[in-house]
Image 1 (cartoon, rainbow, N blue to C red):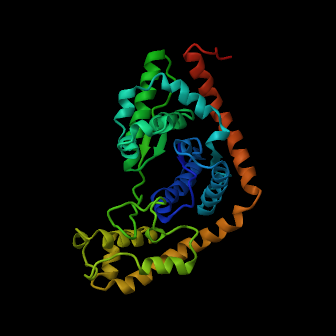
Image 2 (cartoon, rainbow, N blue to C red):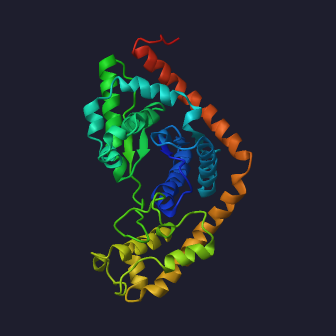
Image 3 (cartoon, rainbow, N blue to C red):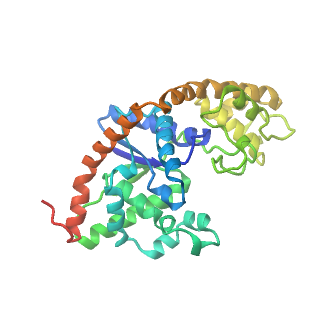
Length: 336
């Protein structure tokens, strides 16, 4: 089993990133390592080219995100942790796969439609071609499984389509068709100000999210001021229907407690939000404080550069045979 996944280095991680993805990366890392498999996690700095970012900001963001991932539990001794641009094979294979991918396939990508909006003529080619680079990211390493959320299923399906067409067109059984890995405990964390919108680092209101770098008093304040409704918490999950903000806070508590909504409501059902929010803040502080402290200790450490350099070297070694065979299959460079 080989798992591959990446995250854009576009600022501090928040609670949605942690509970929705990173915590499960850590669990998968440990499970896969224990069974003799391999995990590769990368900072998707090539993907970040779909928007203009200042050079120094991008470089700093890669280091900060590396520190945050390690602080959350990604272990460079167990997993291959690297930044995408340090492995040129990602960009090379993306270009090779551009000959296989089809405009119609990319035009149907819902994320392209959502992010480009009405300004498609002004969107970057990198944004349009984003799913092909994603396909290269996983096919390059012969990934067997890719952890995905609901919003990424379509991109993984495209990667499988590209792999199938490439293998068929060239008559070479080169690429493994990766399977989606959807962790059962993955949590979809919503904004603290709007229970119908995902928690996001792009939201202009910092009160909408819990950052993993937030101090304890900020966490308490954000939870205390999180939007709710005037009704008490129900005793049954069915009572959360139509109450997006209440459902979100209960889901966060359940995820932190490795529990479920019914169990949480069995404890807090019938109470007002005041006591529940206080308990939720305590849970958050208990989980986030050690992550924040380790993150702060790592941020300026040269250890980060060593981890990235070592991870990139290991990733290049894993990627090299697949890239060589892709060039050979297309009649560009004969494999030795």
